Amino acid sequence: MGDWPVIVVRAGEAQITQYEGSTERLLLGPDRGSPDLVVRTYSCDPGFTTGIHRHTADSVAVITSGTAVFAWGIELENEMELTVGDWLYIGKDVPHEERTPSDVGVEMIVVLNDGGGTSITDPQTERTHRRSDRKRAGVTISVPARLRTELHDVDIRPVRFVRERS
Image (cartoon, rainbow, N blue to C red; front, side, top):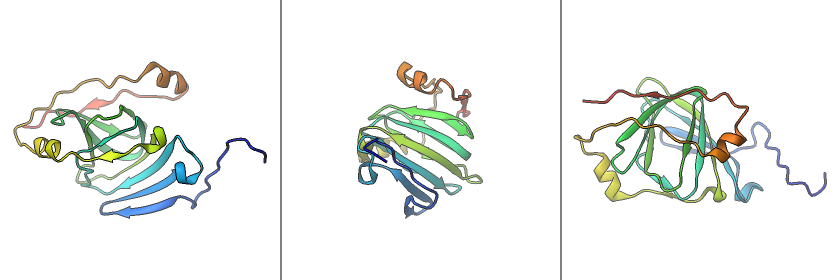
């Protein structure tokens, strides 16, 4: 097969990690032959939340089944609902949280650069995001031109804003 950098991950070959409320399937990463990209799938139960965290790498996610709510910002002041076919770009070091509605789970594919970077939970930010008086404001996620170019043949639908909570 030569020295071409090609990796095939067949069905059933993913490295599976079970967490409370979610399952992670690691397909590619530094320990699986891909030094720069990490590719995972996640299956999350209804009512699941990641808690606020950030990554030291850029990431892209696509929803393949179900619904997720994505919130970001220092106080998670921005929020969007994502459904099947929606794509999301998250810049490195952006504080964020993913969660599922109480009646619907989600499945998604997540790709991170820089060997996956590191996931960091910030206790100060976590306390801030749990304040009951925080406001929600919808903003548009801006996808860098280089990413739009690479995904030019993918049908990317606009994402709906989630209504402000009282």
